[in-house]
Amino acid sequence: MFDVRATLVGSQGLAGGSVTGVVYVRVWAYFASPLPTTPFNQLINLADDPGDGISFGAEDGFIANNDYTSVVYEQSTTVQLPIDRWTCLQMAMPSGTTDTARLYVDGQEVTDVAIAKATVQPRPTHVYIGLEWVGTVASQPAVDAWFDEIIVDDAPTSCTD
Image (tube, rainbow, N blue to C red; front, side, top):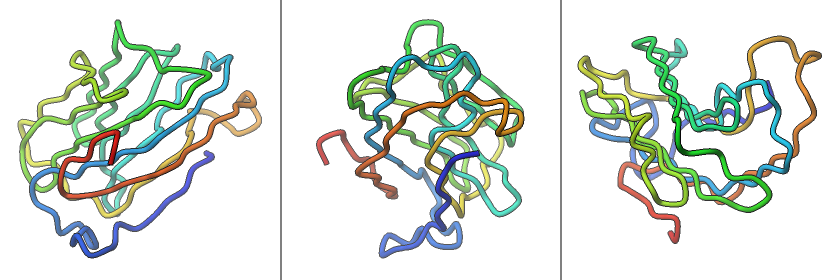
């Protein structure tokens, strides 16, 4: 696993999973070609202390949404992870409520990976940004990826914020 873990803190009241409603994450990312054939289980992951949460990932180059709390996995059949350019990745996840987990690429919702939460989604206490695969580190290919301008908030953010 090659990612950065941060506890959600700050003036917006995100510490300790105190947000009820929706938590929003925006990150600019650059992925150099070629992408590996192994899935990125998480590029952005919001989780509580036991590790229950939802992650924005990709498999075979297509955007994916993985809900660890409900064991739901949705992979897009139409939207691929952009490569060889900076791209805006956004995630909106329910926190302490029912709602829909949504993913966006360059400000456009990837509608075929939205996950409607019929049960209350745990409030996240941590955000993980980076690359994570299934398997051992030794079995993973080398990948060039950069992440910049990360925003975590309790209000929607745009790609221009």
